[in-house]
Amino acid sequence: MKQEWKWYPPAAAVLGIAGLALRLAYYAAAYDPASALLGDSPLAPALWVITALALGLALLAGMRARRFDYRPQGPSVWALAGCLAMAAGIGWSAAHQGPAMVGFLGTAWQVLALLAPVCLAAVGLFRLWGRTPPFALHLPVCLFWLAHLVNQYQGWSGTPQLSAYVYALLGCMGLMLCAYYIAARAAGDVCLGMHLGVGLAAVPMCLMALARTDYPWLYLSGAVWVLLDLPRRGELRPSPKKETP
Image (cartoon, rainbow, N blue to C red; front, top):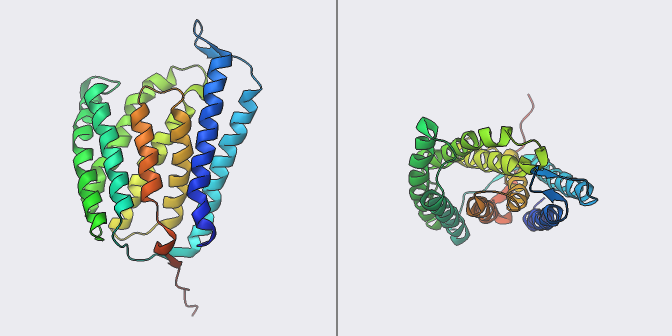
């Protein structure tokens, strides 16, 4: 696992970029603005193949990682860069776009979009110093993606074709769960397999979502955050064997 692990994040990124290129070509060739529907195209089966490969890679990595555990985290400038990238993406989206809904849900999105970048910057500094961030710093990030998911649901549910929004939906869910598992690790509950699995699934889904989304900087920064903050080979060690009575 430690030897092959170095290939998983680049493979997830390559699959995401390939899927993004296919989606862009698909919309250019088969999208009807009058009906807002995608027509038949030979690119559609290829896109679903790329999607299946990306999710299969994430599943494989998650299952393989179940035999491993985290080492204590050392100082990481990469983690700091990832946290700052997503903080910038959330902050830019809050300043230039805002929530998709009004009322309580829209206000919750706005408040969390202001709080999450501050917490991400703080988390990044803890990681730079090689210290475990407090559990509470991860909660606004997780709740922001939950609020974003809820804010987008009404628009997604009114879209007639699944392929038009499924990547944004899965990317948002992946980022929310990734933040949750990082928070769980900070609280002492290590879920390495789930963390790696949802992280590697989130990267290609977020990249493919860029072909058609109102929040491109949000999904791009989320993919960068996951790629830079995933556990590295030096942070993996075999899980201790359980003693049998």
